[in-house]
Length: 212
Image 1 (cartoon, rainbow, N blue to C red):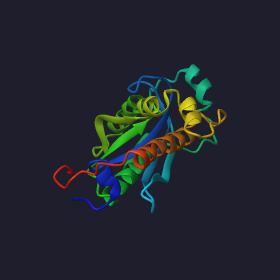
Image 2 (image 1 turned 90 degrees about the vertical axis):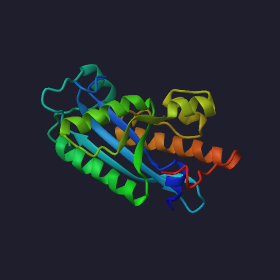
Image 3 (image 1 turned 90 degrees about the horizontal axis):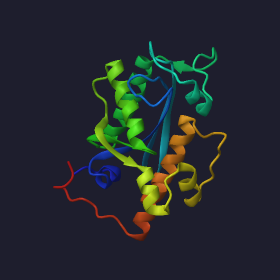
Image 4 (image 1 turned 120 degrees about the vertical axis):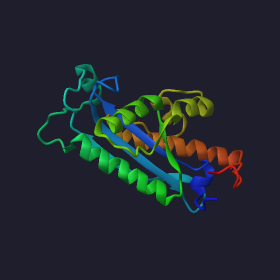
């Protein structure tokens, strides 16, 4: 049985909180412009907390569609000469390799994407791996943990700003729709709900037979 608490708590899966900023809603055709991943772990009090953040600005892939309305929301100028962006192949190598390394360190068999409207983010992450030929995508191909669902359960809210408010977190609308800010806020909400459940209800830790 794995020794790390996070592997035990999530049945061998490593929760990784993801946010993407894009040029539209179609993961196959629209540009991936920014991606952030927040890695989490348990602290000395056995509370889940943020560990560190991986964050990349990304050049649109060749032929990518970019909807001007999407850029109005994110405020991203994909072709600004001072934008510190990586081409997709280099970003994918660094992004996925770092997640895989942390996954291995924490004795987890696979990562599971945590997000707000998580299937949207997973679609872009999977398309990102496929376009760049990254063969070892660490994420489960279809399972996710969604803070929309958790927010509805815990607070009766599904919109990120309202979930944050009900959870006692500040929400900065000026920083919203930036991948790093949204991912870190989503991670704080996810950890808070997990920790509140542990404090008030408790965990049913899996047995050795139940953990891969």
